[in-house]
Amino acid sequence: MSALGVQSFTQQGWEQVLAKVKRALVYLDAACAESLHWSCGSTRLLEAVGGPACHLREFEPAAVAGGAKQPKAVFVLSCLLKGRTVETLRNIICRSHFQYCVVVTAMNHAVHLTANHVPAAAAAELEGQQPVFEQLEEKLCEWMGSMNYTAEVLHVPLLLAPVSPYLALTPAFACLFPLLPQDLDLLNSARPDKRRMGSLDEVDSTVLTSELLLQIRCLVSGLSSLCEHLGVREECFAVGSLSRIIAADLANYAPAKNRRKTSTGRASVVFVDRTLDLTGTVGHHGDNLVEKIISVLPQLPGHTNDVMVNMIELTTLKNEKNQNMVAPGCLAQSNDTAAKALWEALLNSKHKEAVMEVRRHLVEAASRENLPIKMSMGRVTPGQLMSYIQLFKNNFKALVNHCGLLQLGLATVQTLKHPQTAKWDNFLAFERLLLQSIGDSTISIVLNQLLPMIKPSNQRTNDDYSSEELLILLIYIYSVTGEFTEDKDLAEAEEKVKKALVQVFCEETELSPLLQKVTGCDSSINLTFHKSKIAVDELFTLLRDIAGARNLMKQFKSVYVPGNHTHQVSRPHPSDHPLLILFVVGGITVSEAKMIKDLVPSLKPGTQVIVLSTRLLTPLNILELLFATDRLHPDLGF
Image 1 (cartoon, rainbow, N blue to C red):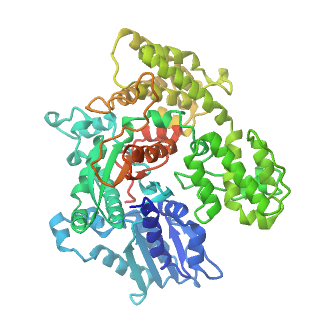
Image 2 (cartoon, rainbow, N blue to C red):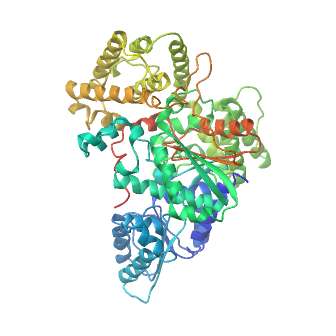
Image 3 (tube, rainbow, N blue to C red):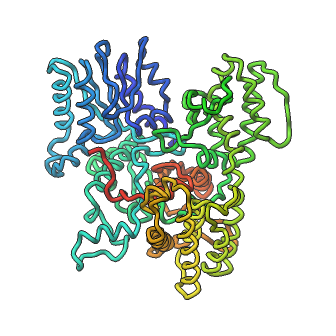
């Protein structure tokens, strides 16, 4: 059984969509656009639309409506057809001149019944019928202005964004994150004292909010569709409290039970809570170029897993202010065979090998185009790569032929030259020192080592740590330490670090979006000493929770073995099936995914592995997830 099943699953879904889009206006929401971006690309969609004028539009209330000469629309949506989503549909259609509307939802009809509170027994009686979709079809005709017009509502499982044959992400669930003890407090606040839960280990589906339960069911429905495509009867395993709930929901999901009766293949599906090990996400020991690229380059608007590559160097524009006039490049190159091959190499190579691979691809491409390349061996430098890239600048044909490769080349150059990349080694050195210290001494000594590095903005140089970077280091310290003993020295060390952080927050001239979340203040002017102290106290409560995340586990209690490397993902014991699907709830890094891909076959030859996760992680976006306030009440679009 091949892990390529992930790519064929996604491509098969998009082929169903492409069959509907001829000469249509196509409206996509962000998660579906991201799935398209990584699977077959917008070019493939535009080709399927055809016609002299074709428009892709973002699905939003203010979206441009269809004109008199645009009678057909296709809406491709990752969410449930309910609430705000339906209102937006109505808004766009009523302002347009459509006579034919197709609505594609990534959520199947069974989940729509759940969302509409149809009891399980009644839903079972409706097998083969789709009343929710049929009612919406009638509404679509009504909004178009004639019941004689054509409306279709159908389900296509557009769950995944395949980053590689073995790694796929779920853009619609990018904000799904395991529960933290602070969430337990909120859940307990709605329960009588006698029924309050003492730990996350006691949480089950009966105590979760209806929004979170529905979000889990939406994910489970997509995963069941994947298992159907792969032809497997899955056994579910879990490590962590939220993972346990998701695994149980998949195991008991009625459509999945029916499917398993006829499936011939076997697979283990293992869910793992990201919070059990945050060291892999905030640490810098992953020697991977892609990990650095997605950490330092700005995020591609509307995406959670791709970045913007500045393409101005391939134009004649000189002024940096003009860069917004040039469309950004990106990492996903689904329609470019050569660029895709380079991307796979970057994912699977160490940093030094990856940079050499970029040089090799650029040299070969330049040679094929007969460009005047000057060969240079030895160490690869950003300047050398840039000189190769600029050979393509004034040759439009060569530029078009190798556009995908040039985007990856520029991403590499911009990352190597980025000041944050130089800091990567500083982080790594300090993390190694911390590991050594944790092996030899207590957490209080480690905190005292960090103390001199906490400096207010007016005393910091480029080599010093910013407020956000200090938070990253603190999360690393507490996550890798795990359980620790309370003593007077620890209390004193924590108080010193707290005091220093309070001062640093207060003296920030401008609060970043992350610090606004952490402090609860929208500007530095409003951040008083008292508010800063409250924020830091809450931060240390979170750090204690992170340190205690593995306390209740019988196995995998530690991610650190003195004198050894840090283990970045706890490795569960799957049953003896030929396919392992590992789903990390809350995100994964490129290095971790590669480690899993390499490790599983080496431990059990013949086993195929597919790594799934909610998103690719960087040290900064793990902070955003940790400080998010909507874990229990995710926005489902209604």
